[in-house]
View 1 (tube, rainbow, N blue to C red):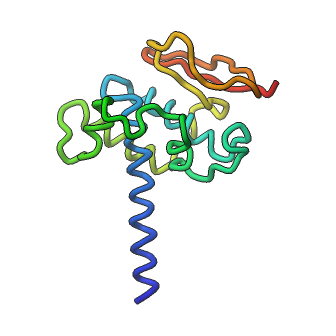
View 2 (cartoon, rainbow, N blue to C red):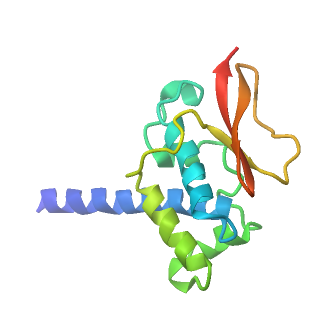
View 3 (tube, rainbow, N blue to C red):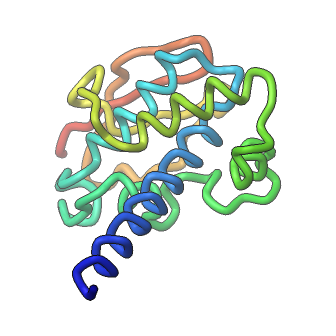
Length: 155
């Protein structure tokens, strides 16, 4: 009985972990982004796991990455409409539905990143990214319709 309860607790924890990560991918990209852009965003998340530049390599899951303080603006942002809509996925409609489903699949982590160096991105509307460059320099990897993606080199 105790073993069954433990397995249920682990399963519930895994669902919650994937749900938070899916909500971040969905909120960061929204239904206006392409499938490949969602994959690039998920790749930045996955590439930060164990990366020395983030919590000295101590992040062990995608959820650890997305809930790291001051990393993803959409986390718990009630002004971000895609974050708000993702709280009740069963009510999503139209273009939100395939965007949400892809976000959920990516949040499970069973994919190979499109690029193993990408660790930062920002929406093209942001003119000056706000990340800390004390320890590394960023270099542009690629640009899509909506985003610019970066890697880092130690200084």
